[in-house]
Image 1 (cartoon, rainbow, N blue to C red):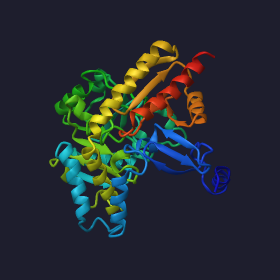
Image 2 (cartoon, one colour):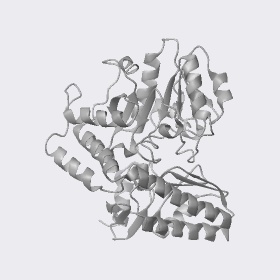
Image 3 (cartoon, one colour):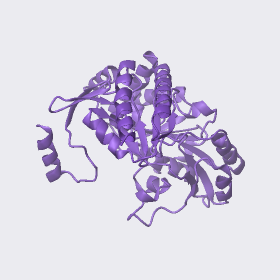
Length: 395
């Protein structure tokens, strides 16, 4: 089926809640994808950040193929060796915590919200989150998302969320009262524009949480599992959260989400209080283990750091030559190039040149490339983006 036929199929049978490009993607390998007309695209935003190992990574594909032939799904009322091993792999690479498994980032954040309320006294239910943050689309995590554009037409929202400016410790402290139970933050804001926290901010949140008996939740749905060059972004800042949420790259594109917490807090999510029917199913668990092992075996954390250095150098240099670039923000393979103009035409022009990138917050060109992207592919992508930006700047 060609792209135009597929577009017509969607018009008739699929709810139009996504803005879709008129392209039918049919296969992928690494950082490349092809459409039904066999056009080849370089993908610097693979899977909306889920495909941190690129498309169809060999070891993950093999692990899923082997698992699906043995056991696809059993309820979480039974033990599954592969799920237990996945939890161990995540715990060993993080703060030695315990895992609750679900299917997505928003579900992981819903679990974290529940856990924070269950772990603290009944009168404490308020959670402080941050302007520009993004925590998901279900109603609780949507309310936690302090961006009014996502709230339109959906009120009344869930009670108990208070918003502070990202990076402002004084504002956070003023919001804390006897009903506050938690602080929830992305250590690096993703959808908010790849915003890296100011020095001392996360450390300050840890201190406030400790002083007031609050649960500190780090939403690492976008930053986790190697994206920033460390296993988890919190490891860059020397600040350990009480709860951490993961999804996106955790299973290399297979649906999967995780909430990690300390052994001291974990028992508060007692039997009957929360569940996810498909959470931690054998296929996701096999993919999750293979993802972590691939990153380790292939030394991809180092690769992510090297690619980050490459992108930072290229775009900082371009900033000197291109007056529409306002700021460059990079950590590992998490890249934001903030413009002084609308970014939508940049994305459109790149697509016409078979390069896939993203724009967030209207003016931030966001790249979430695979950590095994080759330098040659990075060069190719940068050259196209540089040409597009210079062309728009000259208009």
